[in-house]
Image (cartoon, rainbow, N blue to C red; front, side, top):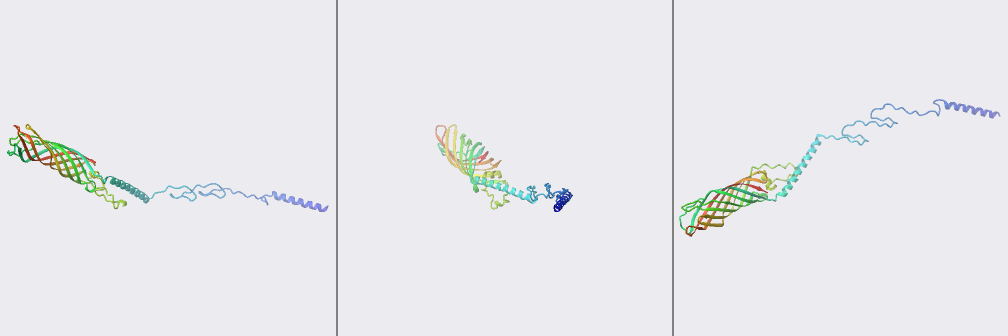
Length: 330
């Protein structure tokens, strides 16, 4: 009985002590970890234990902060600007080189063709070694002069490509009426003279402007602008003033008529010579002035004289022409 009482008393005291310990502030088992209060943080930092993201710190222009994906704009230095400008300049010059080469390849093997129309005056025509034929054989005949007249005609020509562009061929035809003047008691005679000329032409280009110097481009170090690098049309604009001269075969078709009758002399060979100057307004259009000289022996065997007798007149004809016209080159 007594042992039971002692056991009950001991249990009571133990319970009281445990209850007192539980309710005691700061006691064993009653400590609760205190959550630290957030304090003021410095700019750009994040306190431990918080989820707040600090604003990114300022970095020098042109750099990217580690751990971010933002790329700041690049600032070009003067050296970078110069390099870009140099690349653009070289690209532009190389484009011009390609265009020039393409133009050259398309035109360097092409010749130059032209057509022209002209008009002017025939003057100072004379005759030499005039003699009679048929019933007029042996009759004293003075050398008659030829009257001035108008002259008009057309021509077509071609200049060779490349280095022979100074040399060309020309076909022309023109018509004039240098009537035979009255002389030695003989009446005057109407004369119509048509000339076909096949000429060899040589020309010289003057007043040329300098070509652009493309040697500053490294890729063209071995390139030169020779006379055959451009078409002749290009040089017409670059060298607007040209002088030329030509000589060739003239084929003459003559017809005379007077009150006694009519006579012809066709396809008589002679000399056709010329010299002139030409000014180009552009690659295609040119104005020219030209002097021509003709030399030919003509025969008129069918002139009818009074009484029905047949008489003829042979002689050498020397004729001058000055003409001007417009030419189109292509």
